[in-house]
Length: 175
Ligand SMILES: [Zn+2]
Image (cartoon, rainbow, N blue to C red; front, side):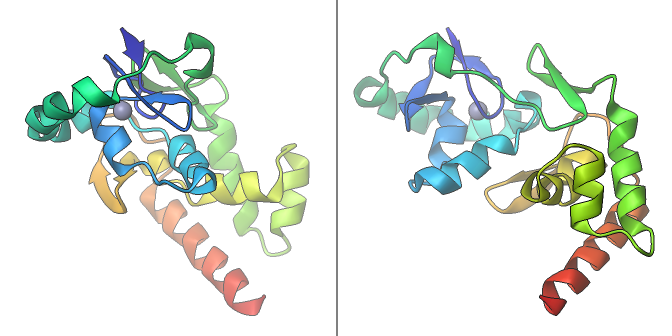
């Protein structure tokens, strides 16, 4: 048994871009390797995908024979978003989870810029942008460009999250 890099689901994995996916995540994984990277970084809770799993099981079974290759275990490393850890396939708040809220709040301060906040928390600007726009923090999961309620704990309030999205929008328009 292997674990899916995107949702940590334990299953007979399907290999794409040299990584192991479950039958649901492989189905939505972009063919462009760069986009696939982004896709994988957006971790989802395996349990939240259960409805999809049931739905796609038959199809997955049919595809299995031709698609399954054994992938090296070393590559199948799962990554949880900043502020969470993965435990038995579930996202749970990490010890540093309060830092996420701090980052959101600091970014809203009048003189705060992406650069300043990134520097303070030893993040890249891109890494910071990913954190600020990550729906995982409000308890949602984004999958196939749709947002669903996750089964994990939120660590940022929706009000704070929305304010940050507004500021990000304003910055985007200015540049
Ligand atoms: Zn998966």
